[in-house]
Image (cartoon, rainbow, N blue to C red):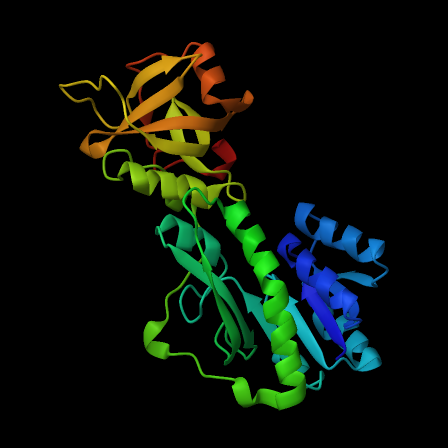
Length: 321
């Protein structure tokens, strides 16, 4: 089977290696400006001698269409594209376009399925390969695989594992499609659709008064690294919190303190913050305007018990963070 990989995702690299090893890849096409993700995809493609083409969105109906007509691929595999494939291209590859999506569709359709699965505290996620139609993440399913979300998994860690898990799923799915055709395709259950849009700043804010320690930990993990972690204010300045863990204190304040209040801070043990329901979080990794900091370094910089993290105000935007 001849495949063109249409991708801008670093998480497609394991599958690129796998398909190249099977002599199935004709070319890799990336849409959009150079960034840290598609640049690594380009470097990998060149390293293993796979043609790499970089286009902008407007060239899908011109240069990309010409490439499809010239190479006559059996299939185009989309893996982290970020824009809609024009429907007039669907019939050019013999078997059409198939998309790799990081959720068990029809759950978590949309731009950021991994973020919302982690933020919502899901214990399982997965990978779906489905045929592309005119709607985002709507086409019939060719193959799925459930993948466990382990405690402490961040966006980057879980996505990397999904990228690895995708390789054999893609290999098996391509073999079945090549030998059996579309007999394995199943329509998505419309009653089970949920959505996963790109998170806004409001989705990344820590709401100390209403979120539990576990919910804050899930939010922090969901935002690390692609969205810069969860966001709060300390001394009026924005802080990105990238890693935390729930903690038990030997001598918690018996009278209780307001959620978001630092209850312990020293260079040997780090910084501990009170949450609702008398729970506590230890802050392990943060980022401020001064750089990426450990909780130990934050304590060493003079952050004291009694100081308080606040919620970012509604008027803030990403340019101030």
